[in-house]
Image 1 (cartoon, protein in one colour):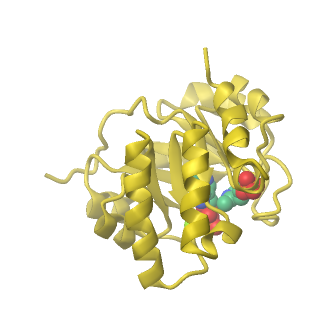
Image 2 (spheres, rainbow, N blue to C red; image 1 turned 90 degrees about the vertical axis):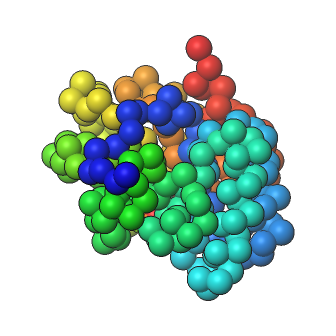
Length: 217
Ligand SMILES: Cc1ncc(COP(=O)(O)OP(=O)(O)O)c(N)n1
Ligand SMILES: Cc1ncsc1CCOP(=O)(O)O
Ligand SMILES: [Mg+2]
């Protein structure tokens, strides 16, 4: 049965949220090896963000990545592409301002899907996403980002303001490293999302472990 109201907040929405980089998407072998390392290091969610490969290649990669994530007990989220998420059986999708709407994503993927919404630096947008059935909201870019240098910025103090107003998990993104992530978590982030901080490191597993350790009690 489909509903506009999401499943209650899964406890799974906490920890390191690793997002694939353009470099690792360049070959299937590299992508899978890198994803495996991030998961071994403790990533709790993996987002397949691939704006570079064909639909056929992406479908193939998504299928394999889904299996890998589930072997590690992690959630598999597709960036942008609701139909790919539906077709490959992903746990959910992440949508931004120019992507499919939250309502469309929820309608297509159903009540149990994890649906994340980009909110940049806007608490108003986050409150609207929460009311509209988002599973989590993402704020940022908090710091300089080589992956998305022109993404709208946000101050870390936004998290302190947003935290008491939101009942759904908050993700912080944009230039997040193992060194600055602790402060974002202390301010209220449930998840920290990173591309370069994980997949740009020579030792992906060790980098992921550094983030993951920040969430240990
Ligand atoms: C966890 C997370 N947060 C934010 C984004 C950015 O989404 P969007 O604004 O749609 O930009 P693109 O990633 O599509 O370039 C994200 N992907 N994941
Ligand atoms: C996709 C996205 N949305 C806001 S910042 C960003 C890029 C995150 O990548 P990095 O962790 O390398 O800064
Ligand atoms: Mg997008």
